[in-house]
Length: 268
Image (cartoon, rainbow, N blue to C red):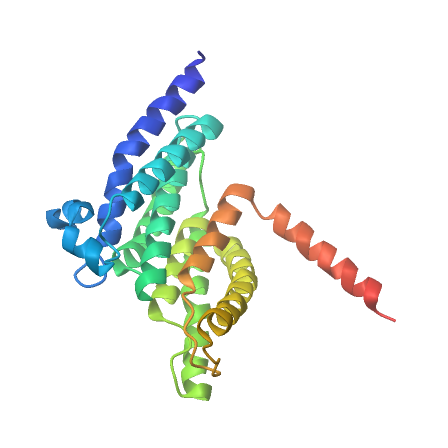
């Protein structure tokens, strides 16, 4: 068995142990956003199972453990024992927590989004200092200027949309959690990724939103009323961010080029 495979298996085992804490983090919201030890025992709560409580039951814990182990093992298999491999697991775990919490409660935990902003900027600044003093560039590195612009652009763009929604529609159109989340993504990955994330999230979110409206109409005979259907946008932002993190910008640019060629081909 190769050394690289050994490292990947060790990472998968560590990821499996950390996976249980993902469920712990998800159960800590909404409300106080603190990792109280009581949440470790939600899976055994019979009363919660009878009530259909989101937090009860062990099945979700097994899925979180499997997810964490797979991401950790595959990250080390692809990138070795490196900064990028660790951040791959960290970003994936964080996005999983955000996705589940936002779908269940329509909130994005500030503990992840706000702290993500500052840690992203600090990481970029620390890498800049590390390289300046002659050390090798980390496997994942974003120029500090790009990270700072990404932070400002990410938060500013969605904040502007939210402000316009209040001004024009007289109601909230974009949650503050989405604004802070995109700012955090920008701080970690730069302004280029922010633009790509918004494009991907908007497209996938439109498809998901229309699908949700149709499902509610068919399944529950619920009539759609404009500006009343709330859609959790955090999961789509997470998908867009992870898409660019793992695959880069090239696949998106190729899709946009193909779309442009298709438009030209349909013109008279």
